[in-house]
Length: 503
Ligand code: FDA
Image: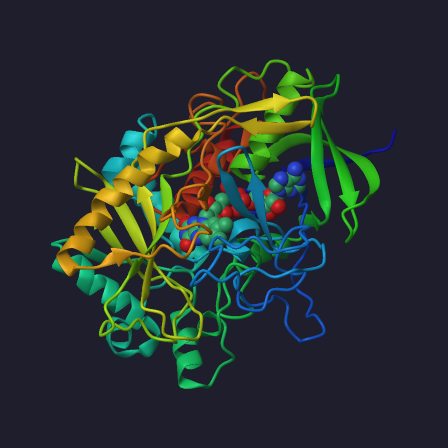
């Protein structure tokens, strides 16, 4: 059998993977990145690389014949989702029994589809979640390094107060303040100077053109423009796309062999190949990395993986909901897709919630205030390997979601009561569903730092095998997670390059 060798292989190309690829390349180590999605750099017949949220086509979703947007309906009408042709589109919804996980597919992973919110958690909560990590060093070195590499910036407050595009945010701020709650600006990797040009009519609209979960054609500093561009610039990094890692085993000499299926645009496997490497970095995301490892443990190809592999998973307490405003509290037909503010009640020890004020850009006034609440839900679940389907199953229950809902409800009942408003009942497919608690944008855990790995992401039971992505975070981080994932990966790579790769 032909084994193609590289000193280092990185599986995936999201945040954790991109940091690994850059730092390996800079250290002079030849590195192959394996990504199951496409490289999103070529315009379609409409001249655009990505499609907008209000006109989804085959580019929107990963091998679906109908889109599966988080909002099922609007005003009871099935107007949100569309029939599409099956294609390796950029957003996937991975369905488990009681929880769907949204993930990005393509070079850049979640950075292609996410809301760009670049939030650093409270140091005290980070220290609570990662008791063995030196948080002074994280906040002095690795968080600043991550923010600078990711290109984090903040909205100009004067422009924010005056622009029609953030009217929806100002209304939600007022309603939070009426309930005695505090709000805070959240930084972003979307270029606000570009957004202001969009508003002025001098640049092509992207955030102001309803583009986000199916990709942004302009303005967003996704990983392909930051870490991955720099990684390729070292000359030591190669990216293979449309290749899905399936198996990992160890050869007799202690090197790793990764089995990969190359797929075509219909999803058919056109080739199966093997890559050998000395150093193997797993950056396939919480779901992707954990599935690879539970499969390897249960099939006996990496039998020394410990019982913690698969455990400690949580959805970061995500709950989406909408409120109905009074007629005089208009949210505006024009809404930027990039959130810039959150209701910060995390320090309320009775009911810690951080709720981002989310857009609903329909092009029409709809009086809806939408939110993605991050609640401090202590519930955790595990992935197990299902041999019948050769895939991982997630043991998350509806009762575990109910814990997040009751926390979100407590906060928003307070806001509704202070403003004499009610919830919207028409957004999630049935009138009994006010809170969307069956999906997450923030899958975290599965290979938790210090449990499945050592304190630097080295997988226990093996040497030169690393996890660098969201699987390391124990189910909750209290804010949107990509800055934390990036900073932890920077910390891992600094340590690994200093200690493990020395000749
Ligand atoms: P990530 O999921 O980014 O990357 C994994 C990559 O590996 C993917 O490209 C995938 O295709 C690939 N892969 C998986 N399995 C593979 C296999 N077997 N073989 C080859 N490749 C494989 N966060 C935040 O901080 N601020 C925000 O505003 C938002 N908003 C947001 C909106 C939406 C719609 C989503 C879906 C998510 C967000 N997030 C977010 C979450 C954020 O995007 C997420 O936490 C990170 O992308 C996770 O980074 P990772 O490095 O863990 O993996």
